[in-house]
Structure formats: structure tokens, C-alpha cells
Image (cartoon, rainbow, N blue to C red):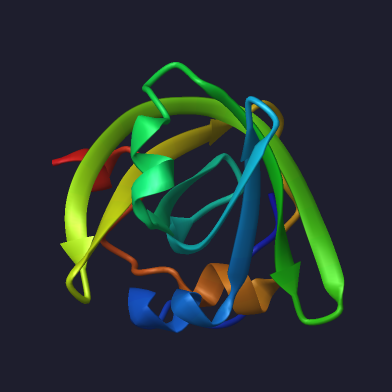
Length: 120
């Protein structure tokens, strides 16, 4: 793993990155709340996403500028919440293989959170 060049900032910075995931031939759009080379905490707004269970296999991509970063992994936890008055699914995703993420993405993730710690 490479050394991070930029210090981490607020996790809110990650809302600028779009994530598209696919589960059982259905597509969902959202954003990462936290991300690392080995996993991510994702927010998928909308009631359709609420049916994704723990243990599900997801594949998708994150748009980082003009470069898509593809991933696949297992959902290790889920939690429902309301976001701006609408239902949303938060989930922890453990990637099948380590990703090589741009420094701008990693530095935007909150330093005290991760895809496993957000399950609380």
C-alpha cells in the first residue's frame, strides 16, 4: 500500500463522488461515506435500496473525475436511516480485492471511521 500524501479531511467531502452499484440486476446510485483500499461505507438513498441484505454480493463503480474505479464485494452490515426526509440504506462493503484508489479519494475519508466502524 502506498503512503498517503494528503491528510484526511471530513467524510462529507466524499459526497462529491458518485457510486453506482448493482445487486440482482438492479442498479442503485449513492455516495461513499468512508472508503479505504479494502472496503467502503456507502449511502444509497431511496426506498428501493432498503432490500439489500447483509451478505449480498455487490458490484459497481465509483466516478473519480473521468476515471471509473470498479469494485466488487460483500455487504458486511446494513443500517436504515433517514436522509433529508427520505429513506436511505447505509452499508459496509468489504471489497473482494484491494483497490488502488486516488489519493484525493482516500484523503476525503474521515480519519476516525471505516467500513466496519460505521456499523455502530
